[in-house]
Image (cartoon, rainbow, N blue to C red):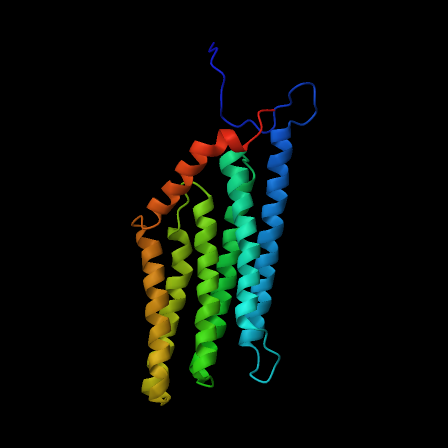
Length: 233
């Protein structure tokens, strides 16, 4: 009914007698690259967290080099996912990214509980504490990055487990310093972690749109350049 040529991506429609269009093939390639790179980054992040949370006498990787390498792997997967969804119109990857976010959240909650255990027993030094902070920030940044990939994604449900864990931490702090007689010097670390995680969770729950300008910039960029990036067949 309409003679205008559509510019929207149709990745699965074969053209010129081919079984698979180039656009569909590139969409599949971007999907595989994104899942592969994000999977590598998450597995590497889990290994790094295990090393940091391990005994002080155990082998510890170079933190700076490890963070850089994991960041590169995550960035490659993130960019490939953006191309697959925003440029080639992949409809499967948003579902997989959402599932990956729940896996990431489960890892963050487990990491949070493990850190709470170490904060409670008060057997850590200043540098080890900041390793805990860095690895938690890395996990939260990975979660937010995945959130930005999917258009219209809602972070509110992801805030609830973190808020519950923060409430558990509050109870542990009161018990430790009121009933168990903890060392006062460690209270600063406990409160830093409590307020930081609580603030992050409340911002997620409030969903006040702090990330909307960044998401809009990504959307506008790919809207302007998608026709020049993707193939026409």
